Image (cartoon, rainbow, N blue to C red; front, top):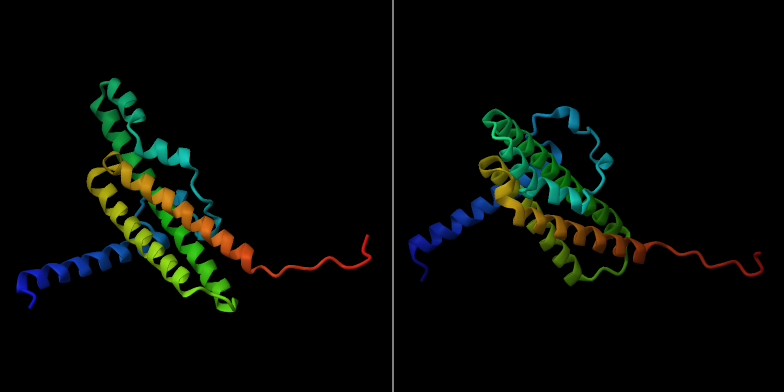
Length: 184
């Protein structure tokens, strides 16, 4: 028999996970970023973020440079702006993940030879990444981008992995034309 505290803890974890996934989906649709000029209305216009951008946003090199200026006003401005850039990155990454899975669903609907195990793994990876984006969005708002560097690098690497899997799936399901006999 499961005790009441364990049941309560499991329930809270399920609810918390659901809220983080919802936060990730919300970031994919319409981030809580105040710089609306940076955001495009059409999520398909968002290219995937390059790895060096993740390194610039979530690593401390620029922060150390600003701290060396010894200006509290400049340091606060930098922290605020960097947080906004990090939130845009989370939104862009979340939108990219969402778009990849949307494309996958569209292709999978017409595919005749789907592997159940592979589809479950993709769904699991998608859910994990959306949960991660939700957690990243909340964490960036709470502690700033420098405090979540490892999480951001992990999310970026796995979102790239999901995109590569989708590209492989798309290439494998694309109809192929046979060369015409006698064609020059």
